[in-house]
Amino acid sequence: MRTRLIAGSRGSTLALKQTQAAIDALAQYMSSVSCKIKVIKTQGDHLLDVPLAKIGGKGVFTKELEQSLLRGEIDFAVHSLKDLPIELPAGLTIGAYLSRELPNDALISKGNRKLKDLPCGATLATGSLRRKLQLLEYRPDLNFVDLRGNIETRLQKLADNHWDGLILAYAGLQRLGRSELVSEILPADLIYPAVGQGIIAIECREDTELLSLFANINDRMTQTCALAERAFLEGMGGGCQIPLGVVSRAQTGVLHLSGKFLLEGRCSGVKHSIQGDADQPVLAGKRLAEELLSLCRQAQCI
Image 1: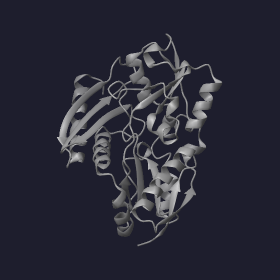
Image 2: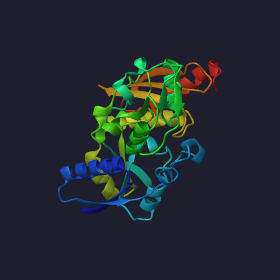
Image 3: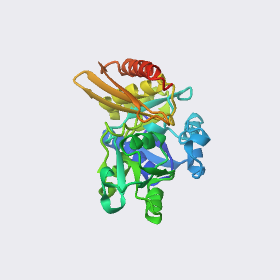
């Protein structure tokens, strides 16, 4: 068993924290394993002034890490699962899913106001169409500005502008120790989270030795939800930028899945819930997609 590994990571504070969490999990299982972090810049890190939808979205935060994996320059890469495309390059796989943090979105507002208490016509910052469309369902009066960059950059831009607040994933704030900034954790039935939000994924080559090692730090319940959510996204024909949300929960052999499809120009999204077998999460995710697509066709929104 190899005891010296190189972990690939993006260079943001959050990415490095997540990579260190993976390394700590490995060290807890096997203290003899030592890991070195190699920082790799991705396309998404270079093009910070361009909306993700305009640069393709798919793989913009992962491609360079995957290329480094395939070249053997690193042994594993650590990702936010929501950034990882459904189709992985040949020879690569997800070796482990770390225990999921709360997947909800969070509001950080000036004056520590909750969403319902923001002034009429308030301006919120977010680069996510999924978030914008769902917030408009609840508050049609809201205005939005596009925002990209790491969490620290977004927080500084909020301070520097006359915006009323911004929307971020709670998991990132929690991992950075900044959860005290949260004005409100938005309920998942109000703002359906992104597929895989709150999950750290470890990607590696299809190497028996590495897979055996990572299996020891894999969280099975998180894996179940991740597989179902990604199968749902694939069934909907989407990539990271599709305005789609999902809520999943696995317990006592049952998988509860709820998905929501959103479309600009419509006053409300189309949503649907199912129960599936927790031992067959991919089938459950595909079934949710099929049934939700059927409802979307009936509603004439696709």
